Structure formats: structure tokens, C-alpha cells
Length: 155
Image (tube, rainbow, N blue to C red):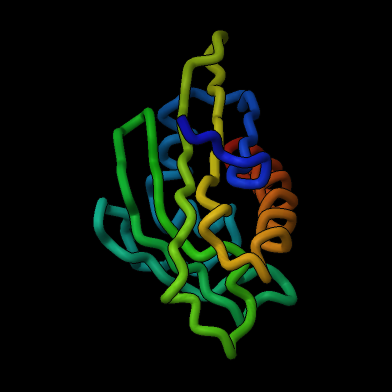
């Protein structure tokens, strides 16, 4: 049996003081997702098998694109997409790399709150020369994004 290394997956969880439907809408509605995530996804929708792409709106990263292919959507339960982690060098073609899988899972947390779990897996398939940096940067990125979605849902 194969075991993933300690650097193959990032997992973060947070309890959000909002019902699942509210958190789900922040994830599943592409424009809402873009608002808290920091990507201009105006006029786009998330649907399995579809690509969503837009400029990053986070200061200092506007030259980059949010570029994902939606994998699965199970309303009120799960949203997943594939992307190229920390694809920040405009001179590099990342399309030959195997993308990581990002999964958002929702569960009831009692008192009309929602447990959101984010898992990004597949870093072991990233080329060795950029694997650890992508893992480190996305780990910090998901920490920040948990704060962003909580702030968005509370607004």
C-alpha cells in the first residue's frame, strides 16, 4: 500500500458561523468565490468539467491568473477543482505538469454553523525543483483564504 508523503497534501479546517447554504453559495457561485478568493470571475459559472479563468485581484499578483477546471460539485457538500499550484512565472508553461486537486467539503457543525475543510493534494506529482515552494506557498495561501471566506460569509 502506498502512503502519500508529508508534503503531498495540505489540509485546513475551520468552523464558520453560518449555515451550510451560505457557505456553499460562497464556494459554488463563481463570482462570489472570486470576491473572497481574490480573482475576477465576473460572468463565469462553476460546472463540472468546465474551466474558470480570471485575473488575480490580490495586490502584487494582478499579473497572474486564477485558472481551474471544476472537478465535482455536490450541492451543500463538496466542490473540487484542479489547478497548477503556485504557477507564478509567466515564462513557464505549466500545462505539462499534473495539476493538484483542491477539495472543499462542508459538514454541519451544530448551532447553524458549518465545518469547512479544504484539502489540496497531489504535490508529489509537481516537478521536484518547484514542489516544496509550491507546497509552502499554498499552505500559507490556504491559511489566508480561510480568513477571507469567513470575512466574506460574515459580510
